Length: 116
Image 1: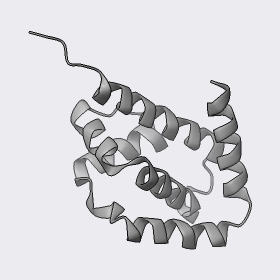
Image 2: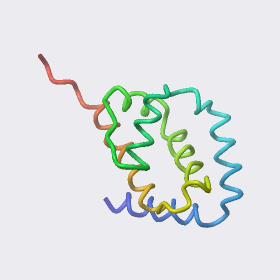
Image 3: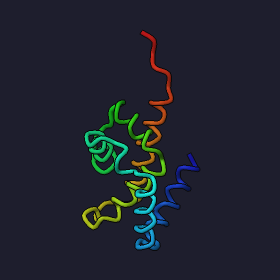
Image 4: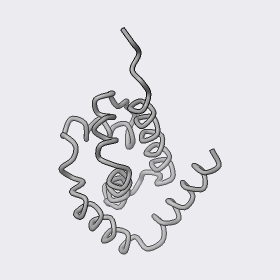
């Protein structure tokens, strides 16, 4: 759990220092990894709602999120936070929700399905 708090603190520090550099870096990561083409729109909306609002993400969309990869997931969340439309959101809270969503999906995908 301490690792999560350290990671969250580092991400918040990263977000608050050098946003212009971060924007270019995140855009490059997204472009290099074709991040915007790896999830279907319904699952993008579920993941967004789970992280930036109040909602849940289905097992199917967890599979797509994990398939997207952590690098893409993190870069897309950071880029969204850099959008002026989301300036009133707490970056620390969003990063925590992003990590929780990722970890929950990873656990769901990695866990064996119950036998019938």
